[in-house]
Length: 292
Image (tube, rainbow, N blue to C red; front, side, top):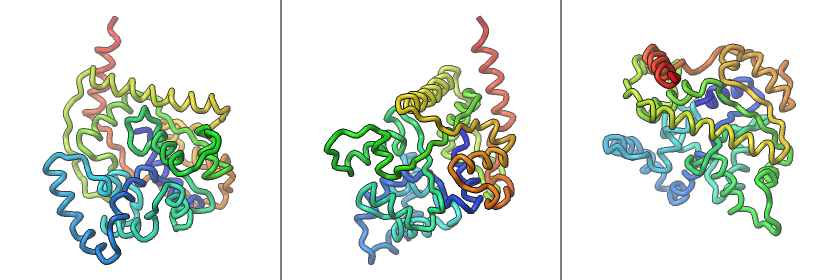
């Protein structure tokens, strides 16, 4: 909830960077799609909406293929979910992580430069940093045990790091809570979501647990960067919201892209999800949490 999807969509619109996104979250969809024969694809695609409705009504977590399709926001430019899955099946489907990443690089999702959005994690997030490292270790036959950075360099020797963080951890935690409760992680300008669904107010303890987890996530990245002597390009969510064009320009320069060749910034695709209720919850939390 630090604006990763928002940043990726803005980078995509520069016209220089392909479509950065949460590709590691999408990788497990291969487990399902590799079992589908080409002549069974249309029947599978036609069945998707019915299965989604059943999983939603049962309150279940989405199955692996549907999780990618409806939660990770890849291929947002393909509005029909069946077209998104067809694209994945025809262009990205692979047997291991290295072939999968090569498929992305060979597709129109890649540009002159290419990026993956990764969440730090404590093994809780499927599709986060530890998942990528695990996939790479399984795919690469190591004579000598490689470090995490060396594994990433097997994918791209010139890998660079952009660290996106959020200054206000309480608001970030509430955004996280709300998304989990409503299962709505993004609100796009063109969506018909006139009034987002209501959500329960978290207790102070519940909100604090999210704050602690987010602080630990930041610490995870700090440890990784320190261990490998990496100086990432750092973007703070609040600064990005206030000065998006400046932040995009500096990021492009960092990765070696020419900002002068980028398409002009035309605004955000996503709408702000925080509202008056969010403000009230945050004020109440601060008022109760800091009375000594």
